[in-house]
Length: 137
Image (cartoon, rainbow, N blue to C red; front, side, top):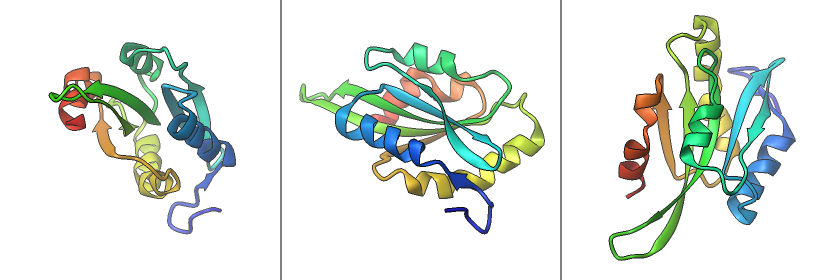
């Protein structure tokens, strides 16, 4: 389970909750954090939660990984959904924390089959709803 390059394990619950988001749409978003050398589920968003609820759930000075199920309507009036992977690494977080999250990101992302768009953000403006909408189309 642990990766030789980052030494990071991924808790089974992370994959399980992601599958629930992807297949059953039980969650609007999931945030993950690294704790004791493994990635664990941090918070689960309710299906009715908004994008603002999601961004408010991210800490100001700690890194997180997150997935967000973004619903939108195309120009042809078709309802669609895309799953975003967001690597949240605020400038105010500790350098060591940023390094650990950066070195483990690709390995963790590979565990979550079905990610369609990836965003890297160091402050809320880099993951504004406008940016998410632009990347979804």
